[in-house]
Image (cartoon, rainbow, N blue to C red):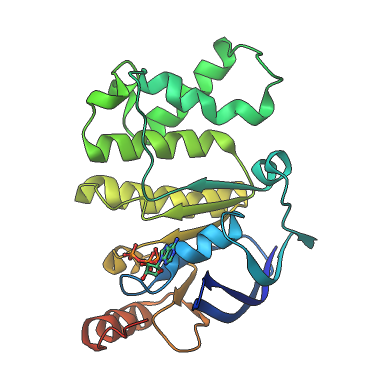
Length: 239
Ligand SMILES: Nc1ncnc2c1ncn2[C@@H]1O[C@H](COP(=O)(O)OP(=O)(O)OP(=O)(O)O)[C@@H](O)[C@H]1O
């Protein structure tokens, strides 16, 4: 399903991802963890074609597409920061998640808005649909972006700290949803997070980019607590 072979990525004079390789044969959840500046967002930027990389990335046996349209069919991406500079209803922002299923200038219809209502309900934010997006709190905005990503319905979902501003209720809800995408919709989810304790009950893998040779490790209470301990006690290297 997803294979990364000897991936090298970073910025001029500054390699952050060094020969990263892993293979997950079937849909799975991967939590990408590590100290601030360890290269977590850099990895997702490489996978989304925002920065160049060396190595190979195969999704369902095929090289990751580089053309925008084909890439949107393969992966959905929720960046850490996402700004909107104009007033728009939350519902209208969410429905844009269906863009790749539309022809140019084709309007959204009743069925599309029904999908929007369905994902808003799954996130328990139906009450936000009719609100102006720019008036929402940071956490509410984050949930609206997540709803948009859910509509994109790509086989590979890349999320950069999707629970960063959420309250404990919505944090748990979002982690539960991500694992249900894997189990019920056969998606592979790569999620950057600092919320290690939310990983305790989940199935999937941890990839700790603060370690010298990061490898996938099965999530279990023991591995989660070992990585929490590692990140709390390991001095942060200056990259
Ligand atoms: N465009 C850039 N040019 C040069 N260096 C950059 C660029 N973007 C990010 N960096 C640096 O690369 C390092 C890794 O950044 P990255 O955003 O991948 O970290 P991160 O692990 O996602 O951190 P955080 O947990 O704080 O979000 C940082 O030291 C950052 O300053």
